Length: 263
Image 1 (cartoon, rainbow, N blue to C red):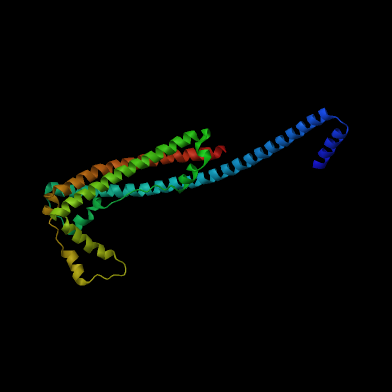
Image 2: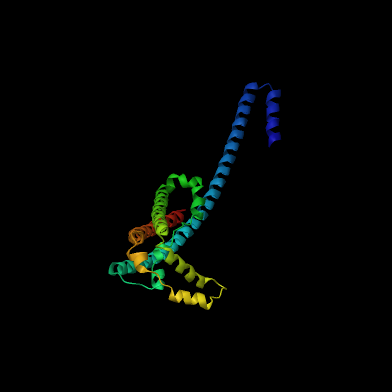
């Protein structure tokens, strides 16, 4: 093809047809430019097709993230509702000034254990790095993702608030020693769960006979009462946010499914 064009140019020059030669040369340059543009366009189409395929694949990972988030949140909601019931039992005993056994106190003080929700973000990180994420066609879903991320930040804030409150009260009680009996019993109780470790008769007897002064540790202990009351309030707010986050996740998953079905 190149030899063919060269022969035409040489013939025009040899015949002295300079004007036609210039027109031909310009036409040839134009054809080369058109060819380059077509090649670039084809390359762009291929790149866009590959990017689209990769993006859609990553959306599947994001859907899996949402499903795992829902599973984790349902489990945490159940745990926190159980903790609320246990905290209510302790507060009722404080109100009635009852004396509870060490084991009952220990098992119903679970509100003092830190818990947190960690969002699964592997799929989200993949789609956020794509140019398609910022496209107009993805705008409505992008807004749903931002709502979901903001909701997660809200959950983190509430959980952090609860955990910091627990830590603050524990430090306060550690200063006057009102929580030390619970710590000691916890250490004995947790020793039962150590795999491969046999509990000697002496330790077992200590666990059975251990006495926690409920009056000192709970009834007459304002920081402990505050921990349980404040803990219940924040825990209810956390559960409410969990449920809202699940709803947002379901709505976002529908958005992903609809987008994929339209491709």
